[in-house]
Length: 202
Image (cartoon, rainbow, N blue to C red; front, side, top):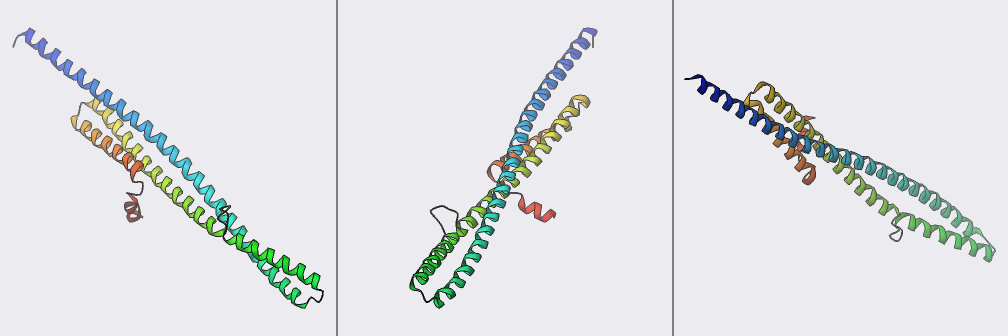
């Protein structure tokens, strides 16, 4: 082989190597883009989980407050009924009975009040719904965290391929990239898909 042919071969190898580096650099940029998206979605899910957790705690506190009020009013109404039975003055008796009816009516509204959506029954439903949304947001957050980790590993492996020119690292990088995208997809569409694995791991 002549010197000219050696030179041409060297130029071809350099061109292929340069072209491969560009492709890897583009692949790393794509992984970094999805990593940024995963981090953003994870932060949003974490914020949502915290907000729903605070809301559910507030609703349960409101529920307990309503329960205490119900118990106090019911007890007071029962005591006043005894007083009304022993009252001899018709005017006083009528006034006592009117107060008893008002208190009993308040007790009913404390327990069930669809008009304001703040009866105990409504508060329980709202609190449970908020807890469900909190758990879903937490599950999404964990999915995005795993997706971010997979994408970061993919970026590291792709960068290592540029330095070492070991093709296997590029393939591994691609696999971790696909894993990261898959986990992001699960976070968006099926946040509880990996719950079984988490329970088994525990």
